[in-house]
Amino acid sequence: MSESAAARLQALFDGKRLTPTQRRIAHCMVRGAAEVPYLSSVELAELAGVSQPSVTRFAVALGFDGYPALRRHLRESTPASESTAPESEPNEYQQAVAGEIENLRRLADFLADPAPVERAGALLAASRPLPVLGLRAAASQAFGFSYFAAKVHPDVRLLDEGGTMLGDRLDAARRAGASTLLCFALPRHPREVVEALAYARSLGLTVVTVADSSFAPVAAHSDLLLPAAVGTGLAFDTACAPMLLGRVLLEAMADHIPGAESRLEEFDTQAAARGLFAD
Image 1 (cartoon, helix red, strand yellow):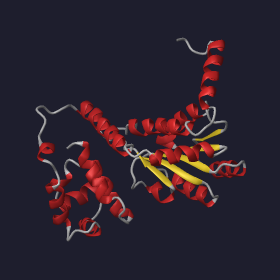
Image 2 (image 1 turned 45 degrees about the vertical axis):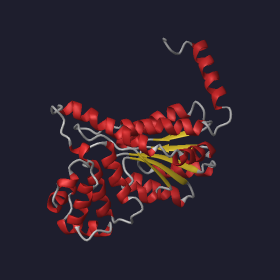
Image 3 (image 1 turned 90 degrees about the vertical axis):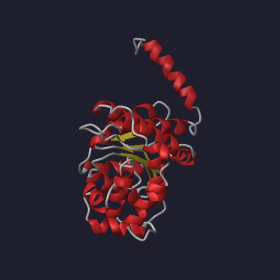
Image 4 (image 1 turned 30 degrees about the vertical axis):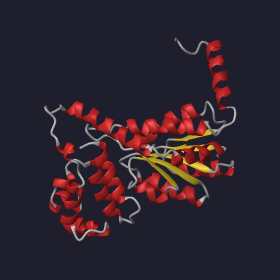
């Protein structure tokens, strides 16, 4: 199933008001877009970890008479070329790479409309300071963004540790003038991240979130959510698409910061003078 299958499913769900259980089913369907048109309601329920009646109610919420009608729609909308089986079955490592390529293609489709990322870049550039949140699996994404962002943004504050101090650091950032919080949220989603976003919005911060799905638990507490799927083919999730989306956000942010290019040139000059790098 090509990337268009997941895109068609996502388009089917966009704009619909779904319950948390229904968002879970939708997320499961997007992740398994190739198999979904051939699953029974019982099989889909087992895959999503919900009850069979929940699948039926989900189909009705999407405007279909029931799950059979939804499945029929999915089958009829699948081009014959997408059901062609590969000549040989790739091994699990190749499948993991192929899954990440698929995620990057979906990200490319999302970026066909640059408006959301450009809006996010403007919000991040205008926030002084700029707090960047990422806990557990998302900590490395937040760190990587913060490392590069500090080269062009005058005040980036990395929030990569949870606990009771997290609220204090959000308070401090807001008092210092922060207007936007950037959050990287990846599965499994820590409860304290969801709580931190809710608290940040109560402080008046605009929340921009990079998450693995539009149906992630953080969606309800995000003003602007930018989706980038993670790979699930290995024992531990892979996050090529979220990392790349973070770099795209850096580009968009730098475009809204006057003098960003001169700051990068100044850093390169200083790095050469100090002999920071071997190359």
